[in-house]
Image (cartoon, rainbow over all chains, first blue to last red; front, top):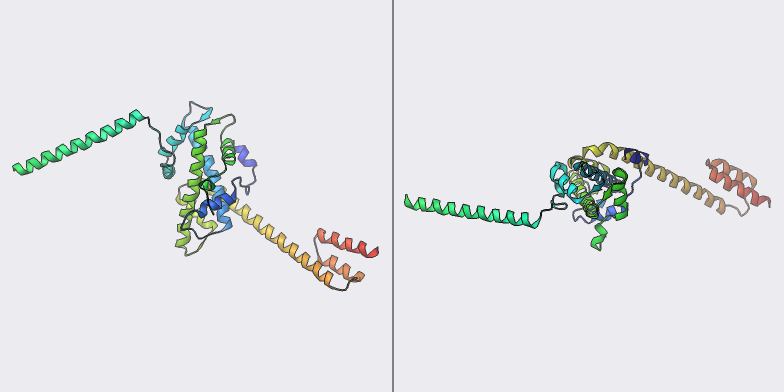
Amino acid sequence: MAEKSGTKPAKGVVLPMARIKTIMRSSAEITNIGQESVYLVAKATELFIQHLATEAFKQDPETTDTLAYGDLAEVVNDADNLQFLADVIPKKIVVRDYLRMVRQQEEEKERAKQQSQQEEREDTDS
Amino acid sequence: MAEKIEDLNLPNAVITRIIKDALPEGVNVSKEARSAISRAASVFVLYATSCANNFALKGKRKTLNGTDVIAAVQEMEFEQFLDQLKDSWEAFKKEQKDKKDAAEKRKKTKEGEKAEGSSTGQPSQDEVNTSTEAAGNTDSMEQGEDKDDDQEM
């Protein structure tokens, strides 16, 4: 895989620069975008896609024939520099686990409430 | 400008090719994984743009330039991209410069032709010769020779 990217010319970029520019411009704060910055963002995005794919692929050494969503979510969850993707590629959970989490939270709230009530009672007693 | 939300997506075929090239041959990429990577790439572009813009603001510049993007990539903790990015940047700058030079050369030869055309209807042999000598590249040499032929006819 390393050879493949090596044979590509250094300047070549596969992602369409016009589209990259559109996405860049959709950010409200941006005024002017130099051509070289569009090029560099396109190139960086390419490197980023390669990086994300290879890291996710390495994540699960047992399955060497598929790249699944779960692998990506795992990498995003683990790597510091991929934290910005936490909302874009969230970890999936099954409904059963979700309900258990909700129940746990409610129980904790309940316990906290009881505790505070108890403390109040103690306060009034003393 | 982006009018539809799809305009903010990157083309699927290109994304797929980049992923395929990065992974060993024969690896399947699930549809879900592919669309997730595509979304991630769009967000990466926005994140990088926003970071780069901060650097431009710091430098009191209104236009994003290459150094801003390099600084942004560094800030985003993707240092491993920097070497390749800088190499590509050099290549890009060289290409732009070559294009500019070529365009200027073309403009010059065009102007030369114009000057020739505006002079007397039938240029003397001497004039044609000087114009061929002045233009160094082979393209205009050929043009000069063509004119020569015309005259002889």
